[in-house]
Image (cartoon, rainbow, N blue to C red; front, side, top):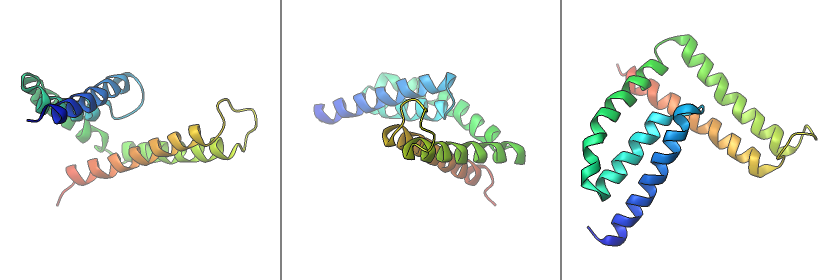
Length: 130
């Protein structure tokens, strides 16, 4: 593999891994990002590949659990819509005293909500295939 490609895969994989680790304790799809980071890192550093399968198993268990009941699906969908709504409120500065008001904060909240809804749809399709 070309050294530049290996460097790019390593950097992007490392960033995804770090963000995923942070999202294990924060709200978000932490295990899926850890898995994505490990997949990219294993392409750059083959020794990392041994960690990929156990994380894949755990991430898929989390995917299945996230859409196991209608209540969880509804709660996740409402959380995604709430993030999008909060992003619009923050971006448009509808409440003047909110900290960090503006579209930089609002757009990140909207993007988070869209990612959450996208992952919910992906998880549902993956586990409820007919």
